[in-house]
Length: 314
Image (tube, rainbow, N blue to C red; front, side, top):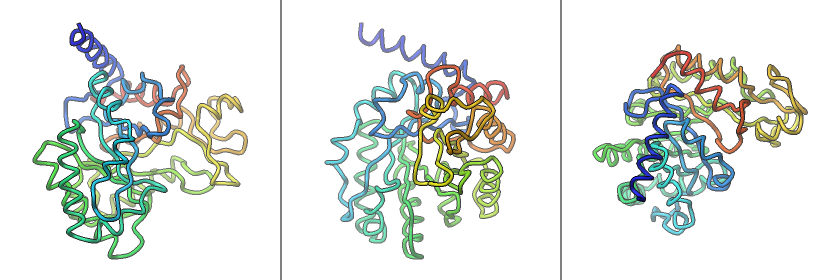
């Protein structure tokens, strides 16, 4: 009975994904990548996982000594992500780093022996726990040595994971760069096209960041355009608010990108950005983060996947 029910759930999820214009059965299909932080996973609408192709569990901080962070992972919702993978037919990835969780990168990544030990344990963990890949988010390398170490970490992780059929992705700040060999090694670049000034995520700034990355040598077919599901206070940029909270508290008109002193992206702005990613032949779009969305027809994720379906990209 349990297997039958699970199979039914999986079939339903795949049908839903198909209705949203998404394909999960091809490596070069247009990706809709959603970050799901450990601290907000319980607030995330389970239906959101039917509208993404890839879900990323955010995040675990690397340990400075290169030892695999088993204790942190024991506290992370790994089992929940395994169930999301089974029930929704979505690829799942494990993120290391992020803002406030990157202090372990420099001592680990700059030491070849520590780096190798970390990667070997990571490959074993992904194989054992059924993760489809790893996502790195080092915010941010601060020296030439650290930049070189980040490139090496990406390249060597790809060498370890690719033979297992697993992916390596990188969350890249809108002004960051990688070495050519690192661009070649990673499967996708999740370009963080937000937090770019007072109006922190305009269409114009996002497209300029993509053009800069292309000039730097990144393959367009590996770039996922970052989409914010939150707003920032224009005169106090350290203050952020979820899109769902902005709608509840300020009731902006559907065409407005500003409310209560916050700048955010409304549904039409994200449809426009999604069209841009489709028309430019990018790998897909990336969302920070899924719990910040609404659960009705005002949903940003619904707008994104509806635009994909309308465009006809599979």
